[in-house]
Each structure stands twice: as structure tokens, then as C-alpha cells.
Image (cartoon, rainbow, N blue to C red; front, side, top):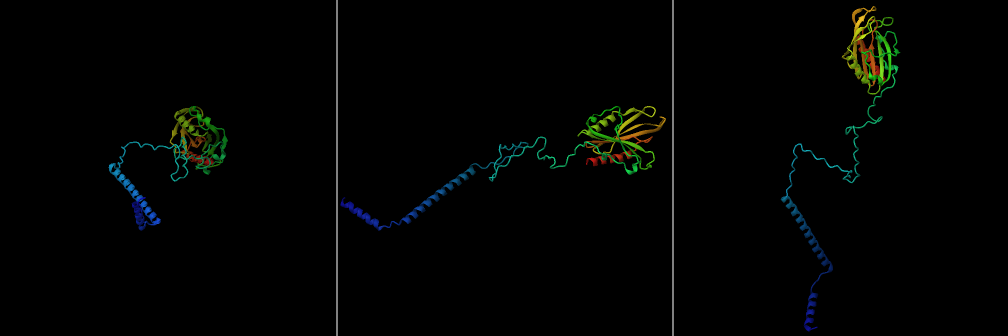
Length: 315
């Protein structure tokens, strides 16, 4: 090695020994500080870029205003999901809605027998004695009603009722009565009823009343047996105050005859009322007694008592 080069190395070594290079901890602290400054600078630069892009987007493309749909435009239905979506909160998926059975409006609850709702009335199958009304005390004459196999309606030009095929059971009785103002036991009665109660199959009782109205309209007059010769009887429907669920009232008129068959100059009037209560029909056919005729007020009062007895029986 040349002398000049050796002198240069010695000079550099002396110069390095004279300088303080710092301990390692100081050097590491300075390096960390420079790294943090560089990271902060990078983050700030990225934030400035994002803000600039957002502002530029707002300026270049402003939000579009919502334009209302023209009147009458149908609203498109929301798309249905094939499967229930899970809860947003992470809970279990909601169960699918139960389909509405056909024939019932949505929101209508079906009534299960014996669980909820009013009990549905059932058609009875037999008629007890208690289903028949009892005469008011002022109308009793001391003759007990007698159950018989009787015709429950008068002949109306030979009309036939198809509702007879829907009968479950029928019972009839003969009831003798007096008017309240007349004496009782031991005196002549003022009238008699053929009183009947008939059970029809469910939904068929109203058929009898429809057929009865039609039969009376179709038979405005007919010949009926008289005491000595046939007489002309006239039939017509009367306006009736409603008894039970529905009722039919009609009259039959014919010239009255004495015991010799001679006209008396008055008319023999008979009233017949059929009353429906559910699937049951009760009929009062007033038939008089020796030249008496039907009193509307008395028939009305006994009709009300007949309906009340049937309702108590049916519950």
C-alpha cells in the first residue's frame, strides 16, 4: 500500500472517532417516527382522494327527483319469495303463511264443533207432549186434548205437497176450547182446533209453507160438502203478523146452513195458520163448533202460545 493511501485511511479514522454516531435506541426511535409520519401522510392522501371523488360525483351527477306515476297506473306486485327469509336479527326463519281454505274469506276463523262459537241447532227426531201448547185457563172447558191420526190441512182443490216426503215425524191432536167471556164446564164449546206439529228434514220445512201459499192461490174457490148439498167455498191468503220464523194464514168461507141444510144468511169462516220454527211446522186449523166461526183474536192468541211451546221444546 502506498504511503499516501495509508495517510488517507488514518485521517478518516480519526475523523470518525471524533463524531458521535448515537446509541442504537435513539436510532430506532428516529426510524419509528419517520415510519409513522409516512403512514399518516399516506392515509391523509387517500382520504383527500375519496372526498374529492365524492364531491365530484355530486357535482357531475345530481340526484334525480322521484316522478309520481300517472293516475290509474297499477302498482307492480312485490316479488314473492319461494322460501321464508331469515330474520334480520339472526333469529329463526318465519314460518310460511297458512293458505286460506276455499269458500271462506281471508281472516274468517273456522268454528270447530264443541270448541268455539254458538251451538248450531239440530233437527229433532221425535215430538214430546210438552211441545204442544196448553190452553189459557180462561179458554179451558174441561175437555182434555186428544191425540189422533188427523188430516192437518183442509183439501185445497186436490193439491199435493212434495214436502210430505221430507217428514221425520208428525203428531196431531184435537183441542176443544171456549171463548173467555163464555161459561166453562158443562156448556157448549165455542170451537175446536186440529193442532199438529211436524218435523221436517233439515232445510225442508220452508218448502211446506211455499207449497201451501201456492195451493191457496191456485184454489180461489171449490165445492165442499154441505149438510144437505155441496156448497161453494172460497179461499184466500190473509196478511199475517209474523209468527216464528215465518207463517202463512188463510181463510175458507162458505155459506152457513142450518140443520136442515137451509142457508142461515151468514158465512162460515175458518182460519188456518201454519208456522215454521226452524225445521218444525206447527199448524192450527180452527174448525168451530155447531154454527160458530173462527175468531181472529182467539186464533192469534193460541198461535202465540203454540210458538212459545215449540221454542221451549227446541231450546
